[in-house]
Length: 393
Length: 189
Image (cartoon, rainbow over all chains, first blue to last red; front, side, top):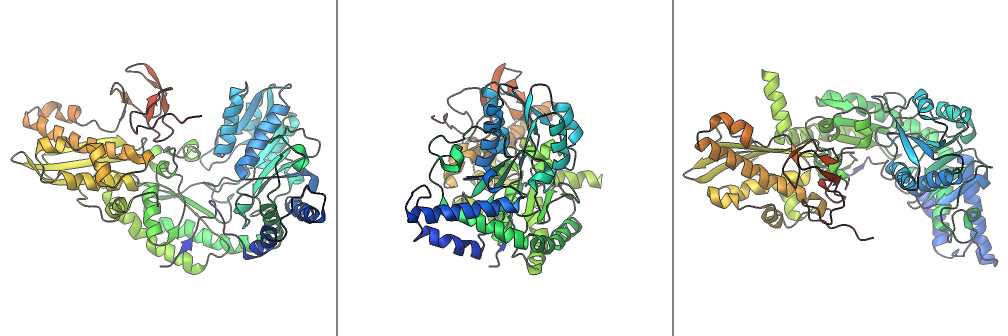
C-alpha cells in the first residue's frame, strides 16, 4: 500500500545525515561529557559544537542555549523557572488561549503556588492581538508567554510586537517556538524575546532533543537540581546522541529551511484550495497567509476527526486531528474553541502537515482518496442527515 | 492499534447503517459537546426487534459500538434487548480502551431509548412521547440524571461539584475515587 506521511507536527522523520551524525555517539563515543579524561572530553566537544549550531540557528550565543529532553520540558522550564525567579516582583502570568498544554498546565501548577494566570483571547484566525496582551498586563505581571506558531492551526503570531509590549511594561517574554524553529527563520534578538523553546523532532532531528534559549542576564531557576550540567540549571548526564542530532538538524535547517519551505508552500496551497472544492462543508482553520508553509488544517463538518484519521490510515495516509476523541482527554481542541469554532465543527478537525519528502503524487493521492472517505462517514452521520433534510425544506 | 480487531472490523464494515423510515421507536443520545451523537431506529413485530438502523457522529469506537449493538439487538425480544448492557457490548467487541468505554454506554443507551420510545408509543402517549422518551442532545449528570450542557463544573440539579474524569473526560463528582462512567479509579500518586 502507498504510504503518505503528512504528520510533520507530530514528528518529522529523522534526517539520514542526522542519523549518521548521531551513530558514533551511540557506539564508540560513549563518554560522559563531565569526565576529565579524553573519552569524556570528546563527548563534551560534541555537545558544545551542537550548542553552537543551535545558537546559530536562532541567532543566539551558545551560552544562552540549554539542552532539554522535549519541547514540553523547555516550556515547563521556562514558565516555572522564570516565574519563580521573579516571585518577589509579582505573581501574575499572561498567556494566550491557544498555548500548548505544556504551557497551560505549567501555569496551572504555578497557580497552586500562589500565581494567577490571565488568558488572552484570539480572533477567528487564531491570532493574538498585541493590544490584548497590553490590556492583560497588570502591575503584578512578571511573565508573558505567547507561542510563535500554532501546530494545530498553523497560525504564526505577531511575536515581535508582543515582545515590544512586554519590554515597554518591563515584563519577561517567553515564546514557545517548537512548531516554528527549523521551519521558519527565527532570530531571537530581532524578535526581542527573553526565552524561547524549540524541539528537534520538528525539524528532522531526533525525539528527545530540545532546547530552551534564555537571554543572557535573565534569571531562571534550575529545573533539575543536581550537578553542574547546563550551567547547573538542568542537571543530569547529557543525552549526547540526541544533542548531537539536534545540532546536526540545526545545521541542516540553516542550509535547507528555505528550500524546504519553498517546496512545501505550493502543496499546502493546493490542499487549501482544492480540498474545499472537492468536498463541501470543509473549512480552513487558522490564518490564510500568516501560517506555517508546511501546514494545512481544516474542519470537516458533520463528522468526527478520529473516524477520519482511522479511515485515512486505512488508505495509507498519516494525518493529525485536534478532535476530542484523538486525545485521551476527549475534549474538543481548546485552540479551535478559543477561535470561536463550535463544538460539533471542532470535532471534525484534520491537520495535514507536509515533510520535505512530500511529493506532488502524494498530494494527488490524498485529494483522490479524501472525498470517498468523507462521503462514507457522512452517510453514517445523523448530523449530515439532519442537514440534508433541512436543506430539502 | 488502540482498538481490537473486532472493533476495527465493525468500524470498517458497520452493519445496519441508516434510518428506518416508518420506525416503531427512535432513540437519540449524546451531543457533539460530549463528542458523540447516536441515533437508533427500531422496527418491532410481535414484541421482537426485527430491524435496527443507526447513525453515529463519533469516533471509531462509537461507530463500532453502534454497529455491534444493532447486530446484538436484531432478533431479540424487547425484554432481552433491554438487558443488553454497555458491558456486554464492550465484551462482544473484544474490549475497548478505558477512555472509550463511555461510547459503549451510549450505544446501549441509544437502543434502550428507542425501545422506550416504542413502548411509550404503544401506551398511546404520543403527545408526550417526543419530549419524554428522547433524552436527546444532552449530557446527563451521572448522579441525579439532571441535564448538563457538558462543560459546567457544577450540577445545578443535585448541587454537587463536578470535574472531568481524566480517563474518559465525562463529568464525575469532584474528588470522587471512582468514575461512574468508565470505572477508572483515581490515579495513585
